[in-house]
Each structure stands twice: as C-alpha cells, then as structure tokens.
Length: 323
Image (cartoon, rainbow, N blue to C red; front, side):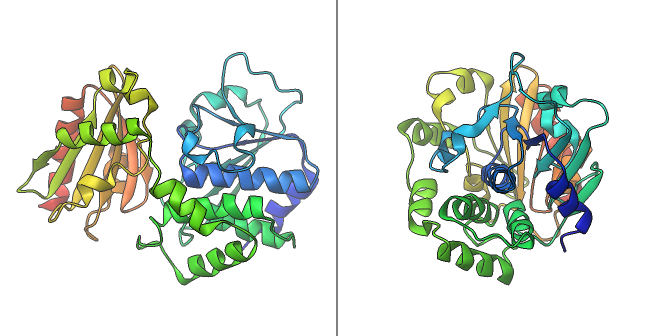
C-alpha cells in the first residue's frame, strides 16, 4: 500500500538526491533509474549518485549514464532537500554518498530487506515484494502514469535479477503479473535475458575459472567457500570482470547448503556474499553478526581481516546453524 505521505513528499517536494547501496546490483540500478524516471515526469530537480562505478552490464538501460559516481570534487547545482534511497537497509550502506547529506534532510526509504533499520522519515518497506523495482512499479502506478519502454526495462531488470530469473522462493504470482505488464509496455524480455545471462567478456569467464580454483569445501560438503584476493581484483584481468551471480556457482554444487563468496576489496577488508538453499539457515542472521544484512537466503556483509580470517569467522557461525 502506497501511503499518502509518500506520495505527498514526491508531489510537493523538490531537489532530490536519489541513491542506493555501494556497488549497486540490478535491482538497485533499476530502482534508482525508475525513481529518476518518475521524478522527471513530475518535473522535479534531482540527481542520482552512488558510491562506486555501476557495472557496465547494465549499460543497455537508457539513462544508465545519468548515474553519477561519487567523488570528492562532485558539484551539485542545487541544495539537496530530500534523499530518496532504494534497496538500502541502512544509511551506512550509502558509504561516501553520506557526505552529500545536509542536516535536516528529509529521508524516504524504499526497501524490501528484512534487515532494514527503518531509518527514513518515511519508510516504504515491503518484505513480500520480490524486488525494489516491483515496489517502484506500484509507486508509479499510484500516480496513474503509463509506462514506456525505458522504465519498463528498468523495472524488469530489477525483477529478473532479484528473483534469479523467476526461480527464487521470493518469486510470487504478483511478480509474473508485473512482468507481463512490463512486456506489454515494451520491455525487451528476450534481449535482456540474452544480455544479462548469455553474454560475457573474456575477463569474466577467466575470472570464473580463477574463482572455482579457490573452492574450499567444509562440513562434508555442506559449506562452500570461494574467493578473490586483492591482488587478482586489482589485476588488469580481474578489474574488468563482472562478478554478478558468481556466488551461485558454489551454491549449485550437490549437497552444498550454504555458500560464501569472499572478495578482498582492499588489504584487511573482505566483502562477503552469503547464499543458502536450506530453509532452516537464515544467512541474514549470520551477516547481521558482522554488521551486514539482506534476506534469509541471500545476504552480505564486510569483515575486517584477511580472507583466512573471514573464512574462520564465517565457518564458526555457519557451523552453529548447521549443527
């Protein structure tokens, strides 16, 4: 249900900063572009800024280049009065974008993670939504606007990414209803599937080989770890690969119940993606121990230390759940 308070701030407010979490995925990118489309239709002044450079995997989206990567020299030609976040469980996940926020800013929080901290002045949280773009679709509908091809593809991208191509348990009948409406509005369903899942760079395929060579099985094959160290991530080959979906390869191994994909993004700091296919293992609870969060079967966090340190800490917590 779209609240009147949410609609009011979008109708009457102006000077919006739209943002999402660091290293935005398809749902985050589709969500912020969809919000940008809505604000543009309402003739609002806004800018879309994220910490990090969005993956070129999503360059087929019409306004992809309008997403600005944060930098210390970034200049905005208006005074930000409203912050609108999509797919962000807490403000810390905006990382350096927080430096742009003036005191007294009005915050709108749109999210579907169970770990969301309700940090907004207005919180639009729907744990039943399969993606944040599904929620933005409902928001756009509440304004009575007709979809065009561009926004239909923004929304569909988030939908297909966050449902794992309509195979995750988060896939609801509503997800298929929305997908049908997006197809009718002009979203190129076949093209998006081909581009996202059947088109890879040579660097990405080579990187996948390196990742699978790091496979480390534990607890008689119930837990799988894979990783990239900082040296490989900073290499010419590693810096060009797209790691979207890599965590699903160890998870797909027969008998594996929990998979962890570790990336040493900088020395002494490890980014962790956790996945589970055991209904009794909630990886959101594990990620929360390390200050992260997400969903019951897909979550993430960051751990200080080496790859070995992170593995040891994660294994300790996952074992508790599995035993």
